[in-house]
Image (cartoon, rainbow, N blue to C red; front, side, top):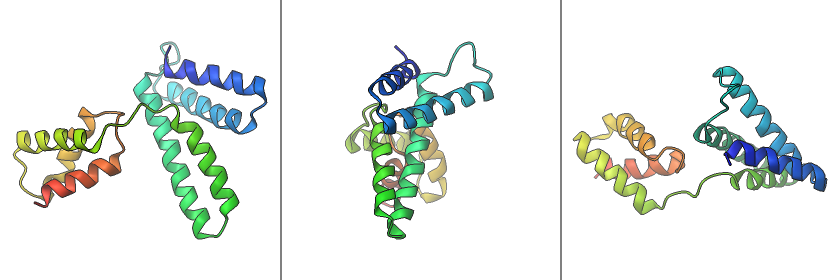
Length: 151
């Protein structure tokens, strides 16, 4: 079963269970998936799981940003709502790799690329993210790559 099908099935189940929060979040994700399929002309084939994961990660990032803004504005009730939605979305992400595994891949990329300083950080980041596609948060990778290149 593809990730898209799982989300669609969970949406139907949330609808049956009258779980309004989950239904709303999954409805929005289904809409984002359909929009991406239209944009990439994949209506017949459907979106691959890695693209669905990207959509989910983008939605999680939006919620993290909203949580920060709501907390700064003293709107804890809205921050809690965004947190609940983010928790619903996180269920659909693949398990993230450990920092040690990310560091191993980053070190390998740095050695293979023969990178010496921060000026080539973008190239290293791109290669690491390509190799670990969909399995890591870019902020964690950036932190590790920065540490490696500043040595």
